[in-house]
Image (tube, rainbow, N blue to C red):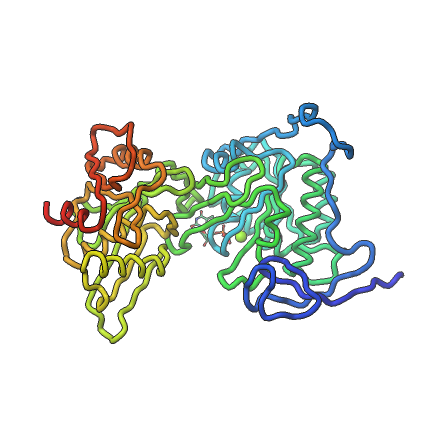
Length: 456
Ligand code: TYD
Ligand code: MG
């Protein structure tokens, strides 16, 4: 047998960057302590082979002559998943579902075939035994007549089996457990993950069978993360949310066949994931009367307007240095807003502990939440409840001015639809079509906001 030449290289677990020597900090992505040592073959078989799309001509051709019927979409009988995929699963596409362990990736990908019995699905499990998958399927319910379970981790066997069965859909759970004989290193290593993904991509493009690939990411990034796969696959869907709570957000991070600003919301129930078609239901207050320290923000995530409850607690600091902590919100931005309140509006918050929380485990980056954060902090500080039918949408600038935000009208319409009677926005917002069942209060800066909110 010919001996395979090998060499030792270093890979970044976060971005997959290759280096001949160890480095404390990856020069490509800037992460610290992510370089791992791996042995790779230097022979002909080594590395990821290129993938060509079937039917593709290898000569340049006019765009007008290219057949686009290749993009056939399969409906997965799940309105939220179909929507974030851009209208169904595209034939021959490789979809990566990433997320922390326990968030619901296996549940969602098993629910898809159970919801679509007409699709012949090959569900490859490398993590759980076939029996465990059966128990999960029994828990979820649905029709399992189209679903084949295959417990295997060797990629060569999986591809051979899939080529003989020719299913309508293949699910691979998970990329970290699969390995190929072509690669020396152990399952879960950067080279194995890249090779597994490349083999699945080749399979998907050659046969036209869509493949759903599951990948774990841990908070510490201790396993080679799906990040290195992002440029190989066609679609990346990422599960977010607090896996102690019951709500899960599925976000499209990359989509070669649709928009990336889509977000789907699910609730983990005793019978699998339930689609939440009106996400504001989980993010807005349950209480009838206003509580102090609570303000509602009309935010936008991607293209979807949401109403979310912002909670703040302001108390006198027990120790010398006041604490500032924020869940779901950037703590530096919170510090900035507190400095604006102190300097521009004269509120002495420098000696107070401030805790901030966004409802539902959502991570918020929309600057329109600034106004609600400021109001929640002031409301808690003065123990003054904001009426429960009032909400806010505005960005706060460094000089204390309230700045207009994108798509203010859509936020107002969503707030009115959910029964809010008053919304505070920037006085610089240009508004045309505003529903008449909601009062729009325009404020120019923080002092004007306080006069309107706390003295009425
Ligand atoms: P899982 O899908 O296995 O997560 P992942 O594949 O991302 O690691 O399951 C997530 C959690 O969901 C698990 O703790 C059990 C829970 N669960 C339910 O609450 N209800 C259900 O119907 C199922 C199937 C799981
Ligand atoms: Mg799993």
